[in-house]
Length: 241
Image 1 (cartoon, rainbow, N blue to C red):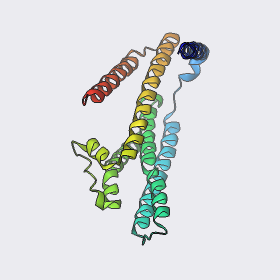
Image 2: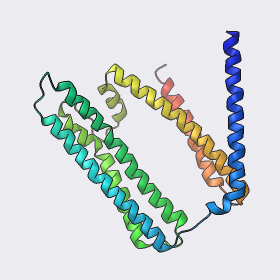
Image 3: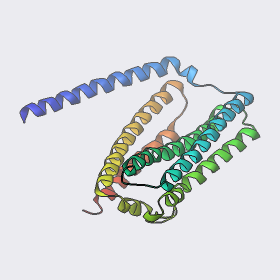
């Protein structure tokens, strides 16, 4: 027991030293290079970047539709005892792709917003229209994800996207193994998000200090996000206790 406490204390000291070193390095980089972080794009430059991002988004949408077609085709195949496991394994691997693609499309839309609002000297009507279309298409595809899953697995009775008890119904559809994996993944994601929020608060605060660009609003919003995440997670985790 005593040895484990010593090891734990050693880990805490090690993490503290690593965190301090990383903090010093980030501070030094921002102090000496913050001029290079502040830059603007001309209208033509921002248009080119937005168009490139839009092309990537179109490719992702086409890939998503192709994945849905492949999954439906596999589901329509004649399944026998010999090939059942192989087909289910192929379907499960393909089912990983749609959420990733939907996340990438949304990320591209957010990057477009960031470029148009924060970097472009004078946003053009073209780039704004492309951004709006990208965000709209991404939202519609994300909203229709469960509808597609319902078409792939009609026997599972997937809930509708606007269902008030959507999360509960999705969890209840899983077996105990799937529920455990989902719970573990969600908890790891929650912990990672909290750590990243604290890191971004520290970096934004240091940047505000060395560049004289007030980051009060963004830091305040991240603090609120951290508080909401903590309170909401604690509330939901203790509701059944």
